[in-house]
Amino acid sequence: MRRIVLLLTLMLALAPPAFAQGWQPQRPVEFVVAAGPGGGTDQFARLVQSVIQKHSLLRVPVIVSNKGGGAGTEAFVHGRASAGNPHVVVFGTNNVWLMPLITRVGYSLSDLRPVAAMAADEFILWTHTDAPWTDARALIAAARARNGTFRMGGSQARDTDHILTKQIERATGVSFTYVPFRSGGEVAVQLAGGHVDANTNNPAENLAQWRGGRVRPVCVFNQRRLALTEKVHNGVGWSDIPTCTEAGIGPQQFNMPRTVWLPARTTDAQMAFWHGLLDRVRQTPEWAAWIESGSQSAMWRTGAELEAFIREDEATNRRDFAAYGWLPE
Image 1: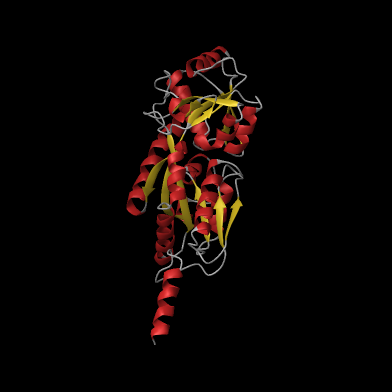
Image 2: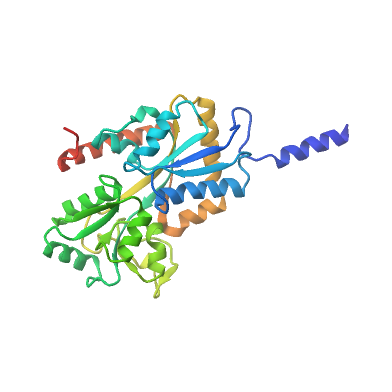
């Protein structure tokens, strides 16, 4: 009898901590990324996948699939088609609720259930190292002189990077030619090659090119400088990047939530499972290191708080989109 008790105790101790009474995945899980490979949303989903695997938080495999077509709407349409399937988990941003405002898409917000907002990405104004301008003021002056032909690269059209570009235009009175690409990773490569004049990537998306000396940051859209003191290139690091307010341009602050969704018609027990699993992910050293890297700020919104945040952000952007002429006729 004692041997049986010891065996049961050992089995419980070795069981993955994310498992508890109630529903749990019974077959491979698909993490659907609303962007192409290499961008911030892709990195976010793959980080969650790697943490789950490293800490054995699931007994089933996790497969990441990129569905970035239609500015990420391909992923949300896939979520709609997966109604009732808790083995499909969609990774996005605020584009989930913004895209239906500006175009006719094959889904509505009610086709998905928000699980959590897990982080908020910071945004930096970047240029390539061959550019004659070396700071934000000079960049804006060059853009003004070029009278609308200055090329600002971004991930997707009428998505977060495009929204930030419009806010910079509104704050400075300067016009840009916005050039959309499939992901932040692709935008980074295009900027490093000098095919666009600037971009507004988050830190992780341009990091490799900065380390390689092909791009440089000119300002961060935050009220405070980034805290990370690590030097990246030529003795310059994250905390050395001036805020855009210091540099004399706006907006003062701009960030973007990283969000996770389930398809509609999944159960509350299935929602509770994924909420609990993601909560465990954010308590790991790997997650803490990602937050501390300076690419994003900590954020944890779920339930009613997250739903209220979505409603407020949707209303604010609806007003802005009307001013930009982006709302459908």
